[in-house]
Length: 281
Image 1: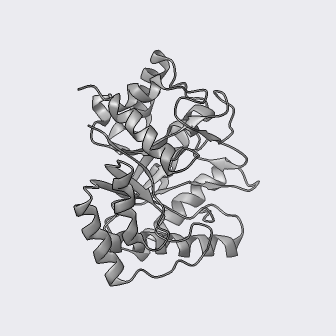
Image 2: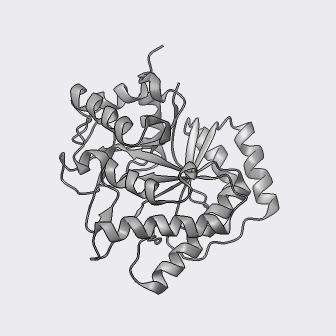
């Protein structure tokens, strides 16, 4: 059975997240380990860490994923911004290590006018730099497929694999498949044949063993729009059926599937219940 959950707030401390997740019906959850719109994250105390880990057990949260700060750009052509991004990313890995979070999801980067090839190489170099700073960490870094909006890279399986190929530690890298982003990037997961072809192509180019986490989001924009706009499940261009197909796909039976749809906790609880009821018994 897939581990269905959603993004959970850490307002008031990370230790409060597990109980919030259980209250919404989460089996898995995603969190920011610090304020996602600030460069400097507040330190996590040993007490908060212990309460967080205890809370995961008590609330039966079986998997936790972290998402990095939206400020980070590992392919920035500006030397100061690149240095700040790398430092912040190292701190993201360190906080995940402290909290025993196995996966850190990140948007690969934006070339800001320098071109895709420049960005892909710079991201690989940044990953090498950051991993060298945390040699004892076992956190797996997950490249999230993007919609390809603006100068963002990582919108094709080929680009994701290029980063992996150019990095010195491919064993530390995996992929997060965001349904909205992939659909906006041109991968037709709505039609049954398109769904089948998409994941066959993923396997051929990257390998399904690298697919570790799903973000479950409908799309407010049509196929191939290259616009990143999430929608609630069943209310966008993707519709409900592809999500039901995905959660019943035996290849992904044990993977975290995280909702990042717009709305409040009440709608998260409703969507989690909707998806769980659609799992074949």
